[in-house]
Image (cartoon, rainbow, N blue to C red; front, side):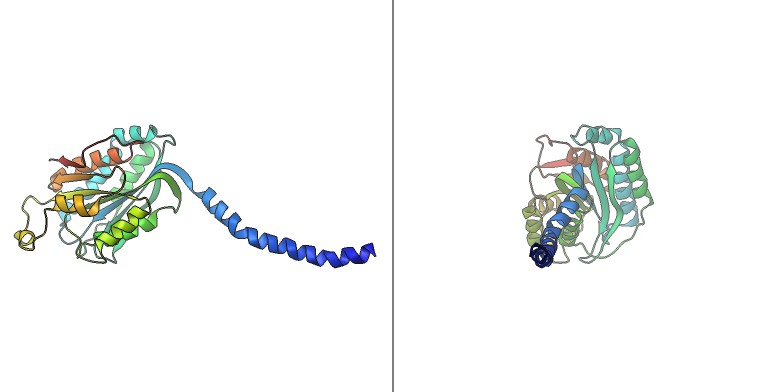
Length: 259
Protein backbone atom coordinates (compact mmCIF):
# COMPACT_ATOMS: atom_id res chain seq x y z
CA UNK A 1 0.00 0.00 0.00
CA UNK A 2 2.79 2.43 0.91
CA UNK A 3 4.53 1.70 -2.37
CA UNK A 4 1.34 2.31 -4.32
CA UNK A 5 0.69 5.53 -2.41
CA UNK A 6 4.22 6.73 -3.00
CA UNK A 7 3.93 6.02 -6.72
CA UNK A 8 0.62 7.87 -6.96
CA UNK A 9 2.00 10.90 -5.14
CA UNK A 10 5.21 11.09 -7.13
CA UNK A 11 3.72 12.54 -10.32
CA UNK A 12 1.69 15.02 -8.27
CA UNK A 13 4.76 16.17 -6.39
CA UNK A 14 6.72 16.46 -9.61
CA UNK A 15 4.01 18.60 -11.14
CA UNK A 16 3.97 20.81 -8.06
CA UNK A 17 7.74 21.23 -8.22
CA UNK A 18 7.58 22.14 -11.92
CA UNK A 19 4.74 24.57 -11.30
CA UNK A 20 6.61 26.17 -8.44
CA UNK A 21 9.73 26.53 -10.55
CA UNK A 22 7.74 28.05 -13.39
CA UNK A 23 6.12 30.57 -11.06
CA UNK A 24 9.46 31.45 -9.52
CA UNK A 25 11.23 31.86 -12.86
CA UNK A 26 10.09 35.44 -13.59
CA UNK A 27 11.12 36.56 -10.11
CA UNK A 28 14.49 34.85 -10.45
CA UNK A 29 14.98 36.39 -13.89
CA UNK A 30 14.10 39.85 -12.57
CA UNK A 31 16.51 39.44 -9.66
CA UNK A 32 19.24 38.30 -12.04
CA UNK A 33 18.70 41.29 -14.30
CA UNK A 34 18.74 43.71 -11.38
CA UNK A 35 21.93 42.14 -10.04
CA UNK A 36 23.56 42.46 -13.48
CA UNK A 37 23.37 46.27 -13.40
CA UNK A 38 26.65 47.75 -12.23
CA UNK A 39 26.31 50.52 -9.61
CA UNK A 40 27.69 53.96 -10.46
CA UNK A 41 27.23 57.38 -8.94
CA UNK A 42 25.65 58.97 -12.04
CA UNK A 43 24.33 57.77 -15.39
CA UNK A 44 25.01 60.68 -17.75
CA UNK A 45 23.71 60.88 -21.32
CA UNK A 46 25.30 63.52 -23.56
CA UNK A 47 22.97 64.59 -26.39
CA UNK A 48 24.64 66.67 -29.12
CA UNK A 49 22.75 68.74 -31.70
CA UNK A 50 23.81 68.12 -35.33
CA UNK A 51 20.94 69.88 -37.11
CA UNK A 52 21.58 72.04 -40.19
CA UNK A 53 21.98 75.19 -38.07
CA UNK A 54 25.24 73.71 -36.74
CA UNK A 55 27.87 74.06 -39.47
CA UNK A 56 30.98 71.88 -39.78
CA UNK A 57 33.20 74.28 -37.81
CA UNK A 58 30.64 74.59 -35.01
CA UNK A 59 30.18 70.83 -34.87
CA UNK A 60 33.94 70.40 -34.56
CA UNK A 61 33.96 72.86 -31.66
CA UNK A 62 31.24 70.84 -29.91
CA UNK A 63 33.10 67.53 -30.19
CA UNK A 64 36.38 69.14 -29.18
CA UNK A 65 34.66 70.64 -26.16
CA UNK A 66 33.32 67.30 -24.92
CA UNK A 67 36.69 65.61 -25.46
CA UNK A 68 38.52 68.37 -23.59
CA UNK A 69 36.09 68.14 -20.67
CA UNK A 70 36.94 64.47 -20.13
CA UNK A 71 40.66 65.18 -20.29
CA UNK A 72 40.35 67.78 -17.53
CA UNK A 73 41.92 66.32 -14.34
CA UNK A 74 39.21 68.01 -12.25
CA UNK A 75 36.65 65.70 -13.82
CA UNK A 76 38.50 62.56 -12.68
CA UNK A 77 38.94 64.09 -9.23
CA UNK A 78 35.23 64.80 -9.00
CA UNK A 79 34.36 61.23 -9.99
CA UNK A 80 36.75 59.80 -7.38
CA UNK A 81 34.95 61.76 -4.67
CA UNK A 82 31.71 59.83 -5.08
CA UNK A 83 30.70 56.86 -2.87
CA UNK A 84 31.12 54.41 -5.76
CA UNK A 85 33.93 56.35 -7.40
CA UNK A 86 32.69 55.84 -10.96
CA UNK A 87 30.13 57.19 -13.41
CA UNK A 88 28.66 55.84 -16.65
CA UNK A 89 28.53 58.09 -19.73
CA UNK A 90 27.38 57.75 -23.32
CA UNK A 91 27.12 60.25 -26.18
CA UNK A 92 24.72 60.46 -29.09
CA UNK A 93 23.92 63.01 -31.78
CA UNK A 94 20.41 64.11 -32.68
CA UNK A 95 18.53 66.10 -35.26
CA UNK A 96 15.18 65.10 -36.83
CA UNK A 97 12.56 63.33 -34.71
CA UNK A 98 13.75 59.93 -36.01
CA UNK A 99 17.49 60.61 -36.22
CA UNK A 100 19.57 59.81 -33.17
CA UNK A 101 22.95 58.10 -33.48
CA UNK A 102 24.74 56.57 -30.50
CA UNK A 103 28.37 57.40 -31.25
CA UNK A 104 29.99 56.47 -27.92
CA UNK A 105 28.17 53.68 -26.04
CA UNK A 106 27.89 53.41 -22.28
CA UNK A 107 31.36 53.67 -20.77
CA UNK A 108 32.37 53.31 -17.13
CA UNK A 109 34.71 56.09 -16.04
CA UNK A 110 36.61 55.70 -12.80
CA UNK A 111 39.80 57.65 -13.31
CA UNK A 112 42.05 59.55 -15.74
CA UNK A 113 42.71 56.54 -18.01
CA UNK A 114 39.07 55.67 -18.67
CA UNK A 115 38.20 59.38 -18.99
CA UNK A 116 40.94 59.78 -21.60
CA UNK A 117 39.61 56.71 -23.41
CA UNK A 118 36.17 58.29 -23.59
CA UNK A 119 37.69 61.53 -24.90
CA UNK A 120 39.53 59.57 -27.61
CA UNK A 121 36.27 57.90 -28.64
CA UNK A 122 34.62 61.31 -28.96
CA UNK A 123 37.53 62.53 -31.10
CA UNK A 124 37.16 59.51 -33.40
CA UNK A 125 33.36 59.70 -33.73
CA UNK A 126 31.97 60.49 -37.20
CA UNK A 127 30.56 63.92 -38.02
CA UNK A 128 27.24 64.14 -39.83
CA UNK A 129 24.71 66.90 -40.36
CA UNK A 130 20.96 66.50 -40.77
CA UNK A 131 17.99 68.87 -41.03
CA UNK A 132 15.59 69.54 -38.21
CA UNK A 133 15.83 70.16 -34.47
CA UNK A 134 13.84 67.63 -32.44
CA UNK A 135 14.61 68.17 -28.77
CA UNK A 136 11.59 65.98 -27.96
CA UNK A 137 13.04 63.15 -30.06
CA UNK A 138 16.37 63.52 -28.26
CA UNK A 139 14.73 63.31 -24.84
CA UNK A 140 12.69 60.26 -25.86
CA UNK A 141 15.79 58.49 -27.15
CA UNK A 142 17.91 59.43 -24.14
CA UNK A 143 15.26 58.15 -21.72
CA UNK A 144 15.40 54.70 -23.31
CA UNK A 145 19.17 54.46 -22.80
CA UNK A 146 19.04 54.30 -19.02
CA UNK A 147 19.13 51.04 -17.07
CA UNK A 148 20.86 49.02 -19.77
CA UNK A 149 24.15 48.23 -18.07
CA UNK A 150 24.45 50.55 -15.10
CA UNK A 151 22.41 51.74 -12.16
CA UNK A 152 23.16 55.25 -10.95
CA UNK A 153 21.86 57.16 -7.97
CA UNK A 154 21.01 59.88 -10.51
CA UNK A 155 20.05 59.74 -14.17
CA UNK A 156 20.97 62.91 -16.05
CA UNK A 157 20.48 63.99 -19.67
CA UNK A 158 22.74 66.79 -20.92
CA UNK A 159 21.14 68.37 -24.01
CA UNK A 160 23.20 70.81 -26.07
CA UNK A 161 21.69 72.73 -28.97
CA UNK A 162 21.33 76.03 -30.76
CA UNK A 163 17.65 76.02 -31.73
CA UNK A 164 14.09 75.37 -30.59
CA UNK A 165 12.10 72.18 -31.07
CA UNK A 166 10.70 72.06 -34.62
CA UNK A 167 10.22 68.35 -35.29
CA UNK A 168 8.56 65.41 -33.55
CA UNK A 169 5.98 65.23 -30.82
CA UNK A 170 5.17 67.79 -28.17
CA UNK A 171 8.23 68.84 -26.20
CA UNK A 172 6.08 69.50 -23.13
CA UNK A 173 4.71 65.94 -23.12
CA UNK A 174 8.10 64.34 -23.73
CA UNK A 175 9.77 66.45 -21.06
CA UNK A 176 7.07 65.59 -18.50
CA UNK A 177 7.35 61.87 -19.21
CA UNK A 178 11.09 62.00 -18.52
CA UNK A 179 10.61 64.02 -15.34
CA UNK A 180 7.99 61.54 -14.10
CA UNK A 181 10.63 58.83 -14.41
CA UNK A 182 12.98 60.80 -12.17
CA UNK A 183 15.32 61.81 -14.99
CA UNK A 184 17.09 65.17 -14.62
CA UNK A 185 17.22 67.29 -17.78
CA UNK A 186 20.05 69.82 -18.03
CA UNK A 187 20.62 72.12 -20.98
CA UNK A 188 23.52 73.71 -22.80
CA UNK A 189 22.18 76.43 -25.07
CA UNK A 190 24.59 77.80 -27.65
CA UNK A 191 23.77 81.37 -28.61
CA UNK A 192 24.51 82.60 -32.11
CA UNK A 193 26.38 85.87 -31.94
CA UNK A 194 24.55 86.91 -35.13
CA UNK A 195 21.06 85.53 -34.61
CA UNK A 196 18.65 85.28 -37.50
CA UNK A 197 15.96 87.98 -37.56
CA UNK A 198 13.45 85.26 -38.49
CA UNK A 199 13.33 84.06 -34.88
CA UNK A 200 12.18 87.45 -33.63
CA UNK A 201 9.69 87.76 -36.47
CA UNK A 202 8.24 84.34 -35.57
CA UNK A 203 7.68 85.48 -31.99
CA UNK A 204 10.11 82.91 -30.57
CA UNK A 205 11.71 83.65 -27.20
CA UNK A 206 15.49 83.98 -26.87
CA UNK A 207 17.09 80.54 -26.89
CA UNK A 208 18.40 80.75 -23.32
CA UNK A 209 14.93 81.60 -22.04
CA UNK A 210 13.43 78.80 -24.13
CA UNK A 211 15.82 76.19 -22.71
CA UNK A 212 15.30 77.52 -19.19
CA UNK A 213 11.49 77.41 -19.38
CA UNK A 214 10.79 74.55 -21.79
CA UNK A 215 13.69 72.08 -21.67
CA UNK A 216 15.44 71.72 -18.33
CA UNK A 217 13.78 70.18 -15.29
CA UNK A 218 14.16 67.88 -12.31
CA UNK A 219 15.97 68.16 -8.96
CA UNK A 220 19.07 70.33 -9.24
CA UNK A 221 18.62 70.93 -12.97
CA UNK A 222 20.36 73.92 -14.54
CA UNK A 223 21.16 75.58 -17.83
CA UNK A 224 24.61 76.47 -19.11
CA UNK A 225 24.67 79.15 -21.80
CA UNK A 226 27.58 79.32 -24.24
CA UNK A 227 27.92 82.79 -25.71
CA UNK A 228 28.82 81.54 -29.18
CA UNK A 229 30.36 78.20 -30.21
CA UNK A 230 33.81 79.54 -29.29
CA UNK A 231 32.68 79.39 -25.65
CA UNK A 232 31.40 75.81 -25.96
CA UNK A 233 34.50 74.12 -24.54
CA UNK A 234 34.48 76.27 -21.41
CA UNK A 235 30.74 75.80 -21.01
CA UNK A 236 30.68 72.02 -21.37
CA UNK A 237 33.66 71.51 -19.03
CA UNK A 238 32.02 73.51 -16.25
CA UNK A 239 28.70 71.85 -16.90
CA UNK A 240 29.87 68.24 -16.73
CA UNK A 241 31.98 68.82 -13.61
CA UNK A 242 28.89 70.22 -11.91
CA UNK A 243 26.72 67.34 -13.14
CA UNK A 244 28.92 64.57 -11.76
CA UNK A 245 29.16 66.10 -8.29
CA UNK A 246 27.88 63.74 -5.59
CA UNK A 247 25.60 66.39 -4.13
CA UNK A 248 25.54 69.22 -6.65
CA UNK A 249 26.04 72.42 -4.66
CA UNK A 250 23.35 75.04 -4.91
CA UNK A 251 24.13 77.12 -7.92
CA UNK A 252 22.47 79.50 -10.31
CA UNK A 253 19.70 78.13 -12.46
CA UNK A 254 21.45 79.69 -15.45
CA UNK A 255 25.22 79.97 -15.85
CA UNK A 256 27.02 81.68 -18.72
CA UNK A 257 30.33 80.96 -20.38
CA UNK A 258 32.29 83.31 -22.64
CA UNK A 259 35.06 82.64 -25.13
